[in-house]
Length: 169
Image (cartoon, rainbow, N blue to C red; front, side, top):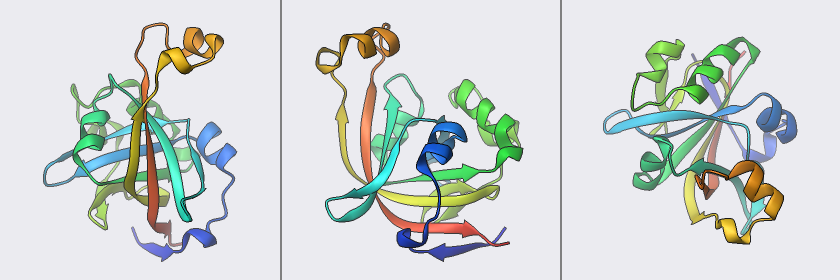
């Protein structure tokens, strides 16, 4: 599959649709040292510190967290509706227990040293710029009770978008 490199300013996607409804794969690691994708439906895209940026969240219990901590880059891969089953699989199975790519039918490849998938329509390659743990004590009571009753909080990551790739038609 061929991808065309574009600038962040050329992106034309609705983040509420792409992130919240269609979901995406957050992938960290390299093909040489190991990697893991996880399905996400929370995140943000915009400008921070005068740079095109994304914010994403990884629970402490997730296998992907270790790869995020070890690597300086990660990808956000947006796949079309035809891959909803693969996204569901990657969001409901742990890479500790299976080969997510093989079992979901996705084909990994590297762009700029970061793992993504041939099936992606859009790939954002990001450089990790900041990470912080969410503190339950600082959250509104309804959020803490509704999302963190088991105390499995998220680590927040801010990444600078250093490259964008769009699938060629």
